[in-house]
Length: 263
Image 1: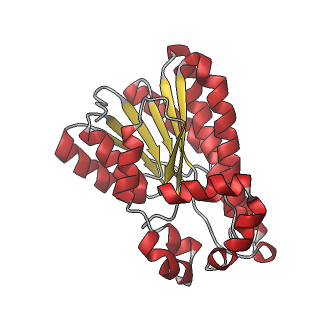
Image 2: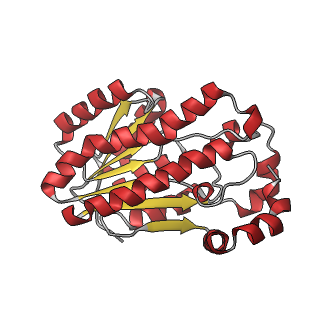
């Protein structure tokens, strides 16, 4: 297990799901964790829990990553409090399943502002100090939807394709500075993500037996912190599916049509 003692791990979207689990598991390994999310009440409760378990190991700040001005001021507060950020986990994001012709432009803009622009803005806040120190790790929570786009997820998939493109370029740029970039590409996870994305619950019902546990995903993420791991793809069989799709897209779209339309 990676010992994170003395490392500062900052996590967006830390009020629940895998963000909360990552914070818990990083703190258990000695990290000082900085919790970021819109719901300050939830963050304060998690902070108190972590500090009770692991000592003075957690800080919490309210942040909506779609607010670029707020990002700058919050990260300045973090730097003033902890000095440096060793690991940034860009976990904040949301999705909404709908047909492309029904996707509201306002929702589309909001999804890009959170999933893509917010991620980039948070990353830009930590890059100068990481490059100067020649040490750091950016972990971007993407999705298998960023590798295989399916019906009713055109906008969400577009945001995750953007995250992967950004991350792949960034990884090469930072390689000479000893700063690592890892993308995490999970399939469906048992979190409240689907409360918004799948309002009718039909998709969750159809794939419930395949859904990943947030604790398992978080463990895999914390395991690779401060290593040069390029990608985490979960579950393994789905990763093979994305590879097959890259090689034989028409075959996958034809053979997988029935499964893809379960949303």
